[in-house]
Image 1 (cartoon, helix red, strand yellow):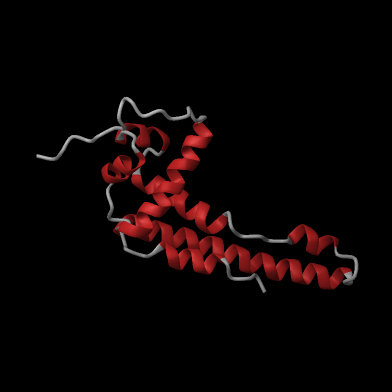
Image 2: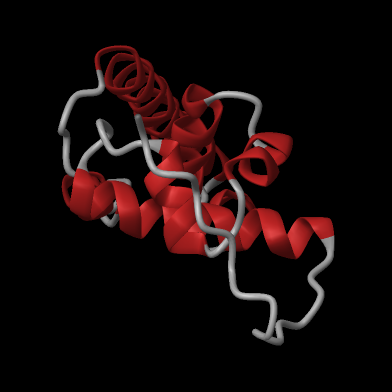
Length: 144
């Protein structure tokens, strides 16, 4: 028999968070948790670390796969700074060069998005111990 999950103590005071803030908190803590435990780490253990119930975690993320995909999106895709608006409005370059650079950078960005989605789906499906540290490192690659 497994242990009953332990929600936070009744006497512990916490600020009430909006649903968006709570979701962001869950993703941040899940990022830390998965980087330490790998994707094999269970949602029960994650909920204990959060000081919340597992059912509350599933209210925000219907499946573990959904949570893992959100962690990847937050860690990897949200950190991409495309700079496309600046590139397109840069008047010191001829329009042809700006457009060529825009399409080249866009193709590289799209490749990253597709690669990240592929890694996330494989990692979630097979609970691969791919470290989020690797994903964090690659998210800082410049688009050149």
